[in-house]
Length: 455
Image 1 (cartoon, rainbow, N blue to C red):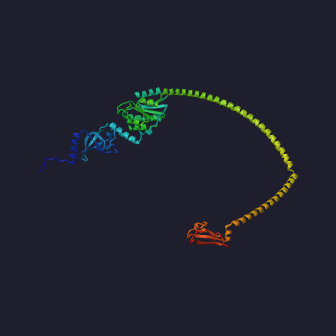
Image 2: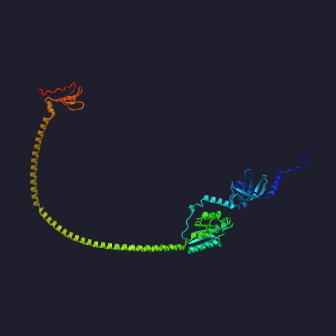
Image 3: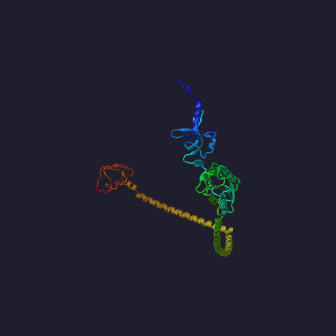
């Protein structure tokens, strides 16, 4: 069977026909999904996939559209995408060419704000350790704000009312719109380059998040964080917060509050000074009164000491006079005694005295010799007598007459009676020429014969 009317397409022709149908059917479309496989090409174009639980579609967003986004694209972000369906002919794939993206559940500006805040927090730009104290009495205050708004007038009015002597240097800038971030940075740089301000106020009045967005710009926040001069951020009303508030050294609820923070009230200062001067005067008066009393007491004590010194001086002079007289008398007496001794020390007198002393010494030696000889003889005779008595009383003399002494050989005690030994005891008998060791065979308790046998 022949199909004479069939239409045969090339792949390119078919793809082109599909492209026409899709692009005509979906010239613009809103699609909600989750970003995955996100890539940013060196050219600035973004490529990623939008997916849900069952399907996915490839997307591309070109550089010019990327620049308009207020938040950062990343995997896992749920978005609402608007664009047109396009077929990429070389691969026969369809894709979405997107014009804009919005985060689902959170506005793009708020999402961008949260992303930038997390990034700068991780870098430590908001750490309290970076905060510097404000100068207590600045000489010049720099102001970065609109030159025509009510904010700058309020700041100038409050500073001049509180501290008339403080200089105010205004560096004007746009505070909202696309040009605001760059102008704010430039205004800060001008103040820093001038080297004049001791502190800087940066701020504007209240508004929507879009109106305040210039103070959330990354370049502005970094310029505030790294400014060498202490900065007070006063952006919006009390309930408004921007990233510049976190980066500044101090955050004020309003521009007027910022002016009060940087400019001390001179009236309060003068009241304090007046109070301090009054206290100082009272203190000086009391101190002078106490010092006058102390001086009177010291004067009286000094006069008393002077009188005492005079008395001691008189007493010293009297002692010196008495000492001098006593010394003269002592010297005269010593001189007389010396003359007397000098007379006694003549050679002939000394010679006679030595002769007399030598004769007396010789007589004493003779008497000593006689006394020693008599004493030695007497002690010798006494020793001989005592030796004879000792020899007579010696138990060994008794042994020579035939007697003996018996000891218990176990304990060394003298046996005086038979009852002190028992059968089998070893005894030791001491005689005149030695000793006899024996053992007891028997003991009798008969009275001892008092007859002494002949030798």
